[in-house]
Length: 216
Ligand code: SAH
Image (cartoon, rainbow, N blue to C red):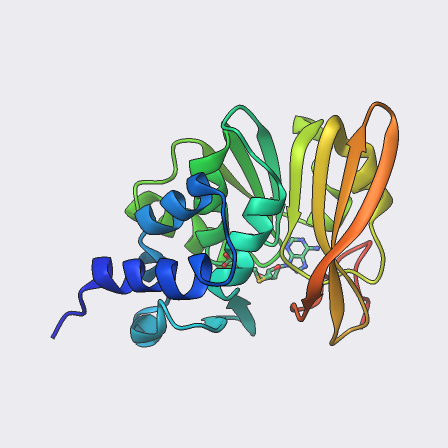
């Protein structure tokens, strides 16, 4: 029997997002519109709307729906922004950001995942304003900078300096920073030449690799 994805999605939005405090209606709408099952490997599809991360192959995971909604909400997008996503994975998070901003550049280090993300985005009808690039996002992507928002979906040992340099003023960077297994989700804002920073929550992400990531 094919699950009723639309009602699973509605239940996820109500129970996992609204109930836990996600307030941005645009974020809730985007999460209700985007078919998460199209971004999850066939054998994991029944878990598409589970309240947990889902394996997407190559040892990587697609974040829990709540974490994606929270990160998107923290960027405070209005629809006009250019956003850089680091750690494209399945392409789901990029699709959510694509529904909230004008343009999204998503960088994925693993070629097989980058290809898959692109296919998933096309199949879900979400590829029009999302560009997937295969490369090391720990150094950002200077070609399309500055970015009004930068969203990092892998844990960094510290905030990579190139990301701060590529962040617009005003602009917001959301990034998990800390130890290999436990991090804090930081929101770094640039406004009027000033930088401010706060911790939104504690979290656990897969490690950011590459030049400015974890080396092991
Ligand atoms: N946002 C994704 C899930 C991200 S999982 C989704 O919606 O599915 C984290 C991803 O970061 C993994 O796919 C991993 O390969 C990627 N990654 C790790 N280090 C990276 C780097 N330096 N540059 C780009 N991607 C990286």
